[in-house]
Structure formats: C-alpha cells, structure tokens
Length: 148
Image 1 (cartoon, one colour):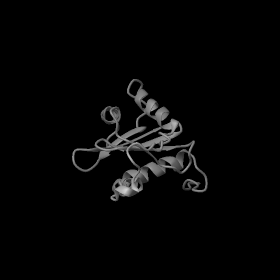
Image 2 (image 1 turned 90 degrees about the horizontal axis):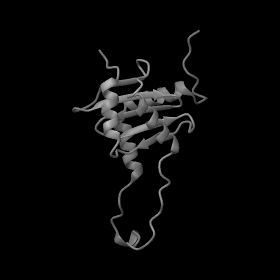
Image 3 (image 1 turned 30 degrees about the vertical axis):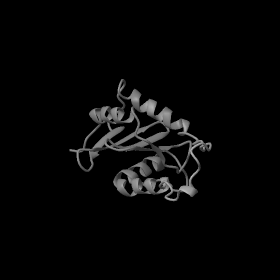
Image 4 (image 1 turned 90 degrees about the vertical axis):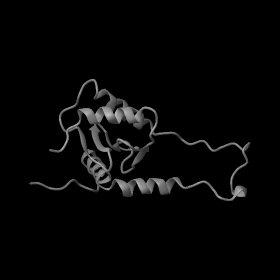
C-alpha cells in the first residue's frame, strides 16, 4: 500500500522532501539564515580590538564540497531526467533543485544554496555564494528539467 515517508527516520525521501519544502518557502528559510548570522555590534566596546585574535569559523562541512563536485560532474555526464529541476523564482532568477547519492541541493540562481546531507540528518547547511556557485547554478539550470 501507498504510505508517506516515515518522518521518524532520516533518509533520501526525507532529505528530498526537506529540500522541496525549502524551495517552496525560500524567503522564509533565507530570512532565518540572515537572522542566525546576526549583525555587527553597534557599541565599539562590545567588539574586539583590531589586533585581537578573531575566532576561527569551522568552515563548510566536507560533505558540501563532495556534493558540489558531484553536481559539477552532472555537467559532463548528465544524470537521469528529473534529478535536476529548474522552476520559476522572482525576478530573472530560477530555483534549482538537484539530488545525488546522499545529498540534495536547493538554490536560487541569484542567491545562495542550501544542502541537505544524509551524513548530517535533519540539518540544513548553507552554501554561501562564492566565485564558483553562480556558474554552477547557471550550468545546472541549462540542463535541468523545467515545468511545462
């Protein structure tokens, strides 16, 4: 019999559903990320002096690099139809949804991406816009399935 994916466990179905939910409510998810980033302190005495050591950020999860490399490989060896999808977004942007083994990506061509990885169940990992992301998203959009 047909049944919805089990929400008590994390796997490919839950990961893809999560990415679809982010795509459908992009503005809300993007705002949450902006809120979590916070803003610079307004009071100079609350900030560290310029010569004080700055805390090190842990950097992106290693699975993000692997997933981005796999998405880039789709440009040389296209995946089955439907693995990459492109839909309308506001302005001239497109919403990209791509899935691979152990990962799902949702991104806007004019913004950042979010990654969901099986190795970190239930976490949504932001992928900041850098020099490579815009080109990758544009290339994925070019080979993506589009709604009719």
